[in-house]
Image: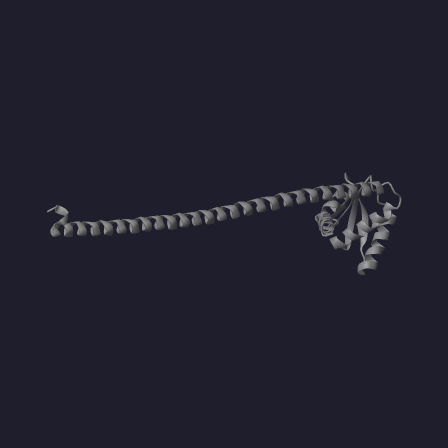
Length: 208
């Protein structure tokens, strides 16, 4: 009798085949599980990488946008500064051109009156430059202008001191308080208003 025909051997072989099939099936399931986990892990890592890339990309884009805004702002500021400098230069030129105009004396009278009102004294003295001479007649006109504008009476006199810059300085008689209305000082005083006008005009041009 052959061994294979032996019932005991057949039982052992059958059990061995069943065990082999079970081991094979378990191995396939484990392999599928490992592959599935590997795929899920790979997908998670890929998703995290995509998210990380997206975040980095957004950060880069934000930095680029911030840099662009900074560059645009810097260019705008340079443009405004250039425009402001040009306007101030033109204003300065026109005012200096007016110094030689006989009608400038009326402007000087208004400067004296303005300074006298700002000083707020009953008596004051007026210093002036040889470039912009002041006469007694101009003082009387300034006194009349102050009277007209404020109703206050005051007495102005010429100071023996001469200024280096065009314009006038109105001071108290003791010289302790003064109001400077020289050309360069007036330019600085109104520079903020001029800059604001330049900015508003630039904004209006850009909105077109």
